[in-house]
Image (cartoon, rainbow, N blue to C red; front, side):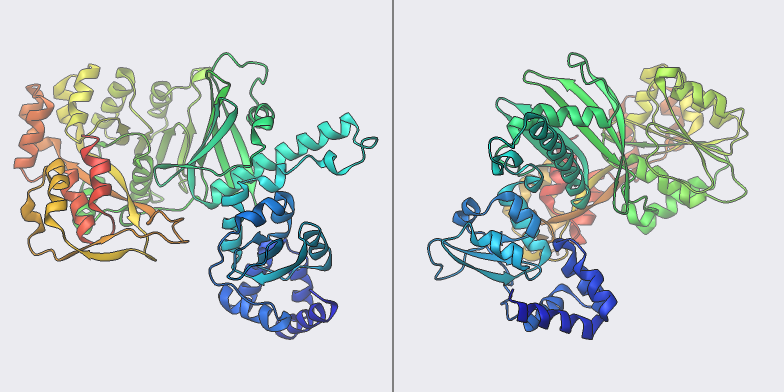
Length: 562
């Protein structure tokens, strides 16, 4: 950007924002300037780009595409620092860089870019999100942190070993921070660092699906340092590589405060490290937001009004059980109730509740904490999970002595919770007397609202899926269209964004005698269905009809699990 163009831009911004705001904008990182300008103008990024284009004469690219040759010419560190992506344009000249950036480049950035092009680079404006996406996908997440060796740019006499080592350590610290920051931005729940032969793979779990993370080409040489950095952050023993270890990291990224649970596992090539990201936004979920319909909410509220009893939520790991229990706690929370939760870990903070984090290493287990909780005059108790007979017996005793107890179990369906408790060793008559409600649940990916499209129903194509779900083909009668995923920038090309719960509600009291008689899970399920219980498949089908998810997603979560 020439001196004249820079003056024009400064004048345009000062005229619209005032001199103080324009100066503050100039001090922000490149990737934040466009969004901050749009926010200051109370406009979208397109309007902000139009202002920049008018002031500088740079053209705007609505949907820039990457230039593979340009990626080889422009170093990762410069691309990340300047937030500039090489783009491919019609009629491109060999050896010339066409660069897209969300903000007009300064003179220094233009000079650096020119050293990697045989012809003067041409600059264009583009959305900050799109430019950032192009850089991540083609250079790798954290590529600007690792980049090439800092020592490569120094004369041999100046590149001292101590300096090189310090630079490498700083690069690894920046890289790990970049990966965690990107995980938060993409709403990942887990991050997996997986050593392979000659490589280090990193994957995010987003909306329940594992997604490979694009990484810098030179990542393998930093593998040991990256794994050690994670262990140091989690305060683990970095010299112990033969045994699994568990720890936690308190990570802050701007407004986000994360409690990260760390687990290491020795593998064939090196230690695999898995991170579980918790408390990202501390958002309060109610029953409607987790996906319960009006009829399901009404049925649950009737049970939540009981003074005592047990409410169980079942499902596989990651199916949202803790979120649902948190919604129940918020539903009944009031100043005249004493709420105590016993969790591992504490995932949501509930105002007014007394929340206990178990610590098995010092003897504070679910059972011991629950036993002590009964001496704390609680009205409502939430136990994160019933894992053993001792915890189950104390929970049932608590419910029979006037407490409302919430907890979770790992079973595939709701009636399976009854047989699971009996298998643990709990007497059937106690189970039948104490358990008021069992809810089985799954989380289905929701269709992206920006790109999902309606398509005519293909009965032949849908028949195998419906058969796998145990649903008759007649459910398609009168259904003309269903929605399907497409993929766009908002959903990272997956066609899905966010998740919604589906629920199966089982009321054991209706089958009291059969439970006391030790009926099998199959028999309890048949009797419950005959009595009007809506199975997970049917609940999920209603979400498909509402256009919130797809038949394929329902089959993946329900048919495969059951």
